[in-house]
Amino acid sequence: MSEQRPRVLSGVQPTGALHLGNWLGAIRNWVALQDSHDTFFCVVDLHAITVPHDPARLAEDTLTTAALYLACGIDPGRSTVFVQSHVAAHSELCWLLNCVTPLNWLERMIQFKEKARKQGADVSAGLLDYPVLMAADILLYDADRVPVGEDQKQHLELARDIAQQRINARFAPRGADGEPLALLKVPEPLILGEGARVMSLTDGRSKMSKSDPNEASRITLLDTPELIVRKIKRAKTDPVMGLELGNPERPEADNLLGLYALLSGLGRERAVQECAAMGWGAFKPLLAEVVVEALRPIQQRYAELRRDPATLNAVLEAGRERASAVAEGTLARVRQALGFLRAR
Ligand code: TYM
Image: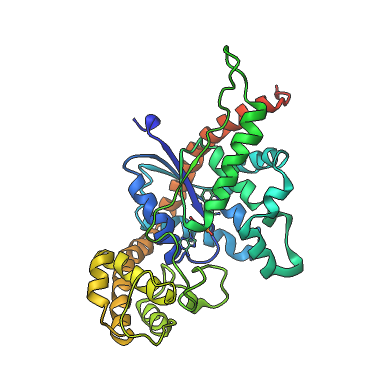
């Protein structure tokens, strides 16, 4: 029965087309979890407005992201797929958590510091608050596990600390034996080694990112085969002959051969054997081909889904209903523990 399965929640921001990092670090792992877990996947549109955004694109990007979840193999028959802003409890729990989260916990978040540095004077309070909203997303669903890429580890630790130290330790009701009863479930991160950190095509030392102004730095799940070939052809290389994994002096070789190992299905050992003596000129077309072939079925399913907006909207509406029912229950528990007057 799905109720007894461990619960999973995760999400991606609808900021432009998703890239290989989002797929390999997160969504691909979600697909497998559907067999063994009670899975909730949201499109985190409230997170997408923590940096300046284009209102003319937000709704469309939200639909694109939801359609890509399904195209990648998320099955709405087994998973709850929904839009974060459709469930108002996310914003409300975020506020309640804000009031118990120390400011200095947020100021030391690496992702905040990096994004704030890039943005200069125009940093919003929402950007600082981003991880608290993320904590609310997770805690509302009593998630046991949160499958994410490596870059989200610190945010997951924050969510755990907020749940444990700031809510459960202070506000959990006591049982008959005087011991606190759990109010919020403390979630575990689920970060799988391979694909957890896909690097930029133009700099093997920085991660592939939607916010990099250089589009050549990433391959999106909707790039045409021609564009994929071109981006890989131009990807940064080094002057060394032969591909290898794990050499810190050769981050581009490690990243691109790692992608090849993963997407070809060969695995790391066999990919190394195949490419150890190969020059970049021979390797790049091979990599381009496996990327194109891996994305082809996703792109086909995506095109079908976008031709049928009624079905996609129905999936999101059913998801909203299921998600709201769970989220409202948790929110009511927290409101009561914090002492709010109940509305009549
Ligand atoms: P976002 O949209 O920045 O990233 C979505 C997911 O993609 C992973 N990821 C990567 N994995 C490997 N290599 C990369 N280069 C790479 N870039 C991104 C991220 O780790 C993430 O898993 N804050 C979250 C969104 C979020 C969330 C949540 C996640 C909001 N609420 C609740 C889990 C649970 C984020 O990073 O979005």
